[in-house]
Image (cartoon, rainbow, N blue to C red; front, side, top):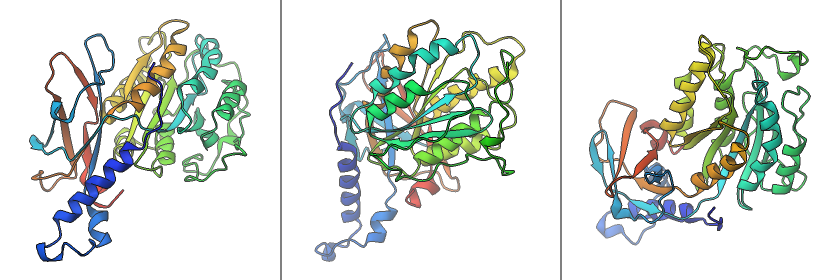
Length: 358
């Protein structure tokens, strides 16, 4: 696995692109004057993280700016910025707290391995969910604290209370969407009982939306990811729709990486089949990825694979030119000149998000 070297290349890249674009907006006789802050803040920059793999599924890390092309609404765009440097992560580890009983033991045993995939400049929060999402820990860079929390976390328990890292007090946005619209909170969830193998009251979409709300305020100089572990169950009772949730991820530059621990998808269990389809689309549309744990021991390998992939994506930026008017959502296509490579990237962006400076 590639060793993580702390890097802030993305922050420098964004500053460089914004500064260069602001200079082009100044009149020739006024180039000595600093550009008005309002012009800089409105400079529309789209961040496009790109993962490239070879035919064996291995990451490809030796490409240059000239190897890439970006098209928006079918129109080729000029690549304003390019970076291949590793980027620190802001991650919400989102854990299904009502897993299929056939996989609970394997997942429980593997949880402490999650901590090994994060470096000293990464910040990680832990959230569990069933009917409602519940914040276990807010963002912290203390890897020992994360390890200890994961070691003590018991899947299926309803007695989780938020744990605060004394060395890293909460400083980010408050946990979002912990209570449902009617005001009833997680404390109203009944005690754990012997559950059927598959339940239909697990609100995965609401949990993803809540994780996105936690991440949206983190800096654009970090890669923002949701690290989801689930058996793909998703009820029909979510307060937030799929489209609303996907939009919230795209406007905040958040990618979703999911690990499915479901061994099979039973015929007739539509909430599982729908959940699997939703997860794949969340991942593909946000530039994340979907992984599958098929046998015991897979999880210990997959956890660091996800963080390595997320951290070592290429970062391309562009300022939209000659785009389709009268529409907010714009599809993106990234192409690479080298043959026999596969690309994973976001499928589009919302113009209103970048012009408002979000």
